[in-house]
Length: 126
Image (cartoon, rainbow, N blue to C red):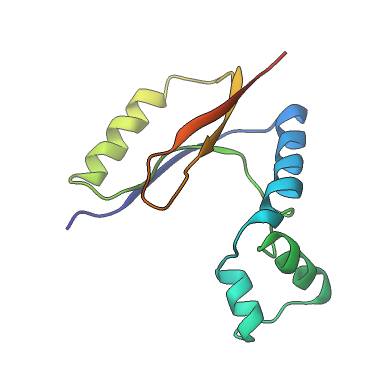
């Protein structure tokens, strides 16, 4: 079995991206079904101080607003053959880019587990 590859490009946020992140976290994360953090908190397997406990109850993560680094995920995860070769190829393809402009943001929806994701709505930058 091949190794698993997670390939992401990190970039520094501008004010629009930071605001979008805050809105998404505030509006979408509370609608989730939970995380390992929440399960561990509920079962008592993990404890947090009061501020982090509140974040886990609301956002399903104790670090959700603390240390977010914007990134663009290309493969998450890739478990096919030659993951290292693919990582090298992707690194070569992206090394010349110093700036990446995002003109749109898309909301992707998966209607049931295992189904394909589809673009529900595309939001354009003014």
